[in-house]
Amino acid sequence: MRRVEGGCHCGAVRFAADAAADAVLLDCNCSICAMTGYLHLIVPGRDFRLLRGADALVEYRFGTGAARHLFCRTCGVRSFYHPRSHPDGISINARCLDGGVPDLPVRPFDGRNWEAARAALEG
Image (cartoon, rainbow, N blue to C red; front, side):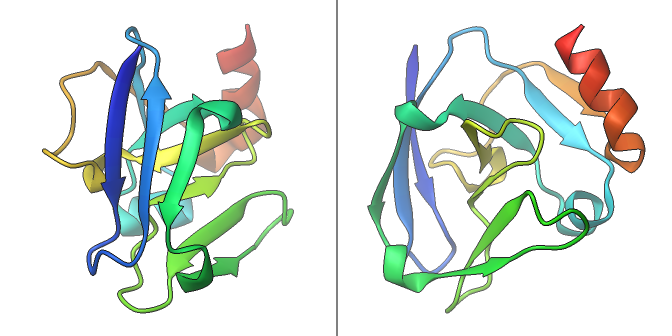
């Protein structure tokens, strides 16, 4: 396990998490991830801790409404969210980690063809 910490641009939101030592980063091409440059580090929900900023978060849902996209109301950065693909997990934006993006393998995720991409992750 590796401990990671990070947050939003203005510092209102801060978090810590324990990520698997063999974690991979997912580079999704869906509309919101492509437009924001989000790079996913998925951790189990039990291994994620919001240190501060619950009151600074605003939620946005689209499509199926399953994913809970959380943004800092001050700076607009989405440093983590509750993904549709991993309902019991948290997706951390690796670009919001202290020290920058960790040296981990990056795997593409075809979010434009979500159902097939999710099935490929499971199988």
